[in-house]
Amino acid sequence: MTTREPLDPKVLLSTLWLFAMLTYTYGDVVTLMDPIRHGTIELTEGFLLFGSILMMIPISMVLLSRILEYRANRWANIISGAFMTVFLIVTLFVAVPTMYYAFFSAIEIACTLFIVRYAWKWH
Image (cartoon, rainbow, N blue to C red):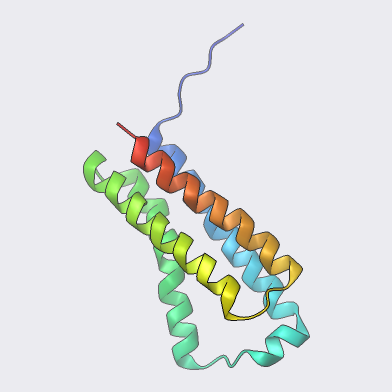
C-alpha cells in the first residue's frame, strides 16, 4: 500500500477557488435560463460591471493562491473567502431564493468557509 503525500496548500486553495468560481458561473447561467427570475433582473451596465468585479475575486484567487508567498497568500485567502461568504449569505436575503439558487449558494458558502478555515489553520 502506498501512502499519499499531503497536498500542497497552494494547490488545494487554488483548486478550491476554481471549484467555487465554476459553481458561481454555472449558478448564474442557470439563473439566466429561468425566464421568471431573468425577467425581474435589470441587466444594466452598472449591474454587469459589479458582477464582473465580484467574479474577479475568485478568478484572481485561483492565480494568487499559486504565486503569493505564504503570509500574503494566507491573508488573501482568509479575506477573500470571508468576503465572498458574507456576500453569498446576504444574497439569500435580497429576494426569495429559488431551490436551485439555494442549492448553489449552500455549496458556494461551504466552499468559501472551508477556504477560510483551511487558510486560517495553515502554518
